[in-house]
Length: 393
Image (cartoon, rainbow, N blue to C red; front, side, top):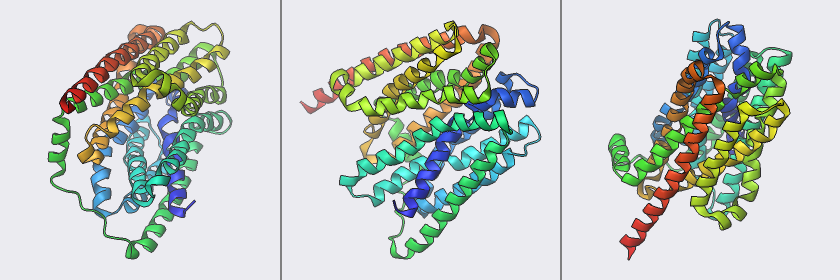
């Protein structure tokens, strides 16, 4: 694997881990700062808010000054912010530093995918992207487990020491590779036209608005509730942070199982079947979680939830890549922005809902919302396909 791709893979791993890190750490952070988990969740909201907002900044910047250079600078920011998290004296300071980490981490995945597209022949690109995306998924699997283990045996703060070191190493490698290859490489492509005018043009398409609204609601409903599952398990069953982290890693395992079965399933269910079944599986899992008599029963629930989520979300991602082919980069930036804005707002809203409705009703309500969203989007897929076929006729 080339040094640049290896560094991008490492960055993707730690980026994926950051996205799911507080699934296991949230109850311990709340305990240390003497606040309820719903208050401590500001650290989750801060990271995902920055991660979503800066998606639309890094893409055009990478086109203008070079993708590796932007990722290198962004991971340097994430390294410094992660180191700060390890010594944050207050919850407010930790939230601010997690926001800064999100600013840096936001550049990694979209610009890495663009760099791979620029530097990999088409016949090899799908396999390369598959290997790269597996690092993100492994980060999401191992992030909660690593966080839980360090919180249990040492301190949750030491998690951020590890993150800071990895981000720094990635930054050094990327700056080095960029410096060595830039003289021989062509000048980075300049963005065409006004950036904000391009975004307005993309959002002017009704189908684009349907896709990005769906991913906003999906991110808010699922991740908003899922952020509190670790706190729920701790409160109800009194489990260790190590065990909670390992259980939450089942979500990523469900995604791996999905990736192994996707071709077989797609041939039998199609996209409409994917979003309907995916939404239904998430509803069953979220509604069942508060009813489980033993903590061991939550393990398959998380695995099935991950399977259902990736059925739904990957269908949305596939649709997003084709919703504005003439401005694909801009369209993907809008898609990613809406996903993480949904996640950030969902965590905040679910935190308020849990205070009034408790965990059980909140989990059930978000699950029902996901099931209804899946059936609604399946109807929209059929209507959009019919419209495209009518235009082509």
